[in-house]
Length: 345
Ligand code: HEC
Ligand code: HEC
Ligand code: HEC
Ligand code: HEC
Ligand code: HEC
Ligand code: HEC
Ligand code: HEC
Ligand code: HEC
Ligand code: HEC
Ligand code: HEC
Image 1 (tube, helix red, strand yellow):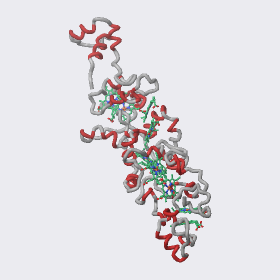
Image 2 (cartoon, rainbow, N blue to C red; image 1 turned 90 degrees about the horizontal axis):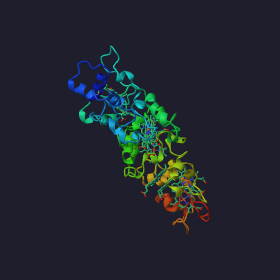
Image 3 (spheres, helix red, strand yellow; image 1 turned 60 degrees about the vertical axis):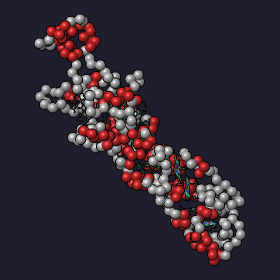
Image 4 (tube, rainbow, N blue to C red; image 1 turned 90 degrees about the vertical axis):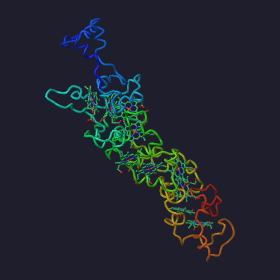
C-alpha cells in the first residue's frame, strides 16, 4: 500500500484539508490547475489501472504488476483489458460502504487467499486451480470469453473442459510473464495435475517424446474444445496423427482396414509397455482380429519364396512375429505382393 501526498494536496485545494501543515500549504500554492493534473494517481501498467494500483502495487507479495510485461499489458493495443475488466468494477471494494467494518472483496476472485506459508504465497494461485474461490467458474470465464471467444475457442461451449467446470484460469496464469499453459515443457505437468492416468502412461517405455519437449499435449489436443472426439485438434484420430506421420496416410495400393479406420485401434498415443506404442504384442494384437488358425498353411518360410510343410507352417507363423513377414502393416504399394495379400513389401 502507499499513500501519496498528492491525494492530500487535492483535498487541501478543495478546502477539505483541515489542519494542513505549512509545508503542504506551500506545495499547494503554485497553481490550482497543476494540482488538478496531479489529482488522479497515475496508471502503472495498464490503462486505467490507477483505481486499483494506488493500493495494489509492486510492494505486494503477489506480483500484481507483472501483468504489464505480458501481452495483456501492451497499452498501445486498445483491445487489452484493465484490472476491472477481469476483477469487476468492485465499487464497494474501492470505497467501503458506510456501516461496513471490513472491505468487501472485489466482484470476481479467481483464486482465494488461503492462510498458507509465505513461501507459497505466489505458488498458491498457480497450484490450486482456483478451487478456493466463491466466484462460479462461468463468471470467472465470462470476461475472458468476452475477448477470446472465436478462433481456437470456437468449440469451447459444450467442450469437455467447459462441461467439466474447468476455468480458463485453471490452466492460464495471468499475473506472470511465464504462463505454463503456453510453455511446451511446463504444459505437460499442468495437464497431469488433473489427468493422472495419462501421467502413468507417459512413463511407459514406449512413448512420444513429450518429456523432451518435442511433442506436447496441445499438438494432438485443443484444450479449448474441438469438432473431433476427445478434444483432438483434427476431426478424427487419423488426421491428428497424419500431421506428423504423413507417410501413413497413403494412398496405398493395398490398404489395411483398421489403419484407415483408427490408429488408436493398435496404438496408445500416450504410451505403451510394448514397442512402437502398441497396445498388445504383435501376434496377440493381430490375433485379436485374425483367427490364429486361419493363416494360409503353405506360407513360405522366408515369407516370400519357397515352400513349407503345412504341418510345421503354423508353428513357424506363431514363433515369429507377424510383422517379420508382414512388414508393410500400414499399407503396401506393391501390386504383386504375393497374391496381392499380405503387406509384405
Ligand atoms: C483503497 C485501497 C484499495 C483499492 C483502491 C483496491 N484494493 Fe483491493 N484490496 C485492498 C485491501 C486492503 C485488500 C485486503 C488486504 C490484502 O490482502 O491486501 C484487498 C484485496 C484485494 C484482492 C484479494 C481479495 C481476496 O480476498 O482474495 C483482490 C483480488 C483485489 N484487492 C483487487 C483489487 C482490484 C481489482 C482493485 C481495483 C478495482 C482494487 N483491489 C482496489 C485495498 C484496495
Ligand atoms: C486478464 C484478466 C486480469 C486482469 C486484467 C487483472 N487480473 Fe488480477 N487476477 C486475475 C487472475 C486470473 C488472478 C488469479 C491468479 C492468476 O491466475 O494469476 C488474479 C489475481 C489478482 C490478485 C491476487 C488475488 C488474491 O486473492 O490475492 C490481485 C490483488 C489482483 N489480481 C489485482 C489486479 C490488479 C490490481 C490488476 C490491474 C493492474 C489486475 N489484477 C488485472 C486476472 C486478471
Ligand atoms: C478486454 C479484452 C481481454 C480480456 C478481458 C482478456 N484478454 Fe486475453 N488477450 C487480449 C488481447 C488483446 C491479447 C493479445 C492479442 C491476442 O493474443 O489475441 C490477449 C492475449 C491473451 C493470451 C495470449 C498471450 C500471449 O502472450 O500471446 C492469453 C493466454 C489470454 N489472453 C488469456 C486470457 C484469459 C485467460 C483471460 C481471462 C482471465 C483473458 N485473456 C482476458 C484481450 C483480453
Ligand atoms: C485445459 C487447459 C486450458 C484451458 C481450460 C484453457 N486454455 Fe487457453 N490454452 C491452453 C494451452 C495449452 C494453450 C497453448 C496452445 C498451443 O500452444 O497450441 C492455450 C492458448 C491460449 C491462448 C493463446 C493462443 C490462442 O489460442 O489464441 C489464448 C488466448 C487462450 N488460450 C485463452 C483461453 C481462454 C479464454 C480460456 C477459457 C475460455 C482458455 N484459454 C482455457 C490451455 C487451456
Ligand atoms: C500423439 C497425440 C497425442 C498426444 C501427444 C496426447 N494425446 Fe491424449 N489422446 C490422443 C488420442 C488419439 C486420444 C483418443 C484415443 C485414445 O484415448 O487412445 C487421446 C485421449 C486423451 C484423453 C481421454 C482419455 C479417455 O479415456 O477418454 C485424455 C484425458 C488425454 N488424451 C490427455 C492427454 C494429455 C494430458 C496429454 C499430454 C500429457 C496428451 N493427452 C497427449 C492423442 C494424444
Ligand atoms: C483443472 C483440471 C484440468 C486440467 C488442468 C486439464 N484438464 Fe483435461 N479434463 C478435465 C476435466 C474435468 C475433464 C472432463 C472429465 C473427464 O473426462 O475426466 C477433462 C477432459 C479432458 C479430455 C477428454 C475429452 C473428452 O472428450 O472426453 C482431454 C483429451 C483432456 N481433458 C486434455 C487435457 C489437456 C491436453 C490438458 C492440458 C493442456 C488438460 N486436459 C488439462 C480437467 C482438467
Ligand atoms: C506433433 C507431431 C506428432 C503427432 C501429431 C503424432 N506423432 Fe507419433 N511421433 C512423433 C515423434 C517426434 C515421434 C518419435 C520419432 C522418433 O523418435 O524417431 C513419434 C513416434 C511415434 C511412434 C513410434 C514410437 C516408438 O516407440 O518407436 C508411433 C507408433 C506413433 N508416433 C504413433 C502416433 C499416433 C498413433 C499418432 C496419432 C494419435 C501420432 N503418432 C501423432 C510425432 C508425432
Ligand atoms: C493394425 C494395427 C495398426 C494400426 C491400426 C496402425 N498401426 Fe502403426 N504400427 C503397427 C505395428 C504392428 C507397428 C510395428 C511395426 C514393426 O515393428 O515393424 C507399427 C508401427 C508404427 C510406427 C513406428 C514405425 C514406423 O513404421 O514408422 C508409427 C509411426 C506408426 N505405427 C504410426 C501409425 C499411424 C499414424 C497409424 C494410423 C494412420 C497407425 N500406425 C495404425 C500396427 C498398426
Ligand atoms: C482391428 C482388427 C485388425 C487387427 C488388430 C489387425 N488386422 Fe489385419 N486385417 C483386418 C481386416 C478387417 C482386414 C481386411 C479383411 C480381409 O481382407 O480379410 C485385414 C487384412 C489383413 C491382411 C491382408 C489380408 C488380405 O486379404 O488382403 C493381412 C496380411 C493382415 N491383415 C495382417 C495383420 C497383421 C500382421 C496384424 C498385426 C500386426 C493385423 N493384421 C492386425 C483387421 C485387423
Ligand atoms: C513366415 C512369414 C509369415 C509370418 C510369420 C506370418 N505370415 Fe501371414 N502371410 C504370409 C504370406 C506369405 C501370406 C500370403 C499368402 C498368400 O498370398 O496366399 C500371408 C497371408 C496372411 C493373411 C491373409 C489371409 C491368408 O491367410 O492368406 C493374413 C490375415 C495373415 N497373413 C496374418 C498373419 C498373422 C496374424 C500373423 C502372425 C500370427 C502372420 N500372418 C504371420 C507370411 C507370414
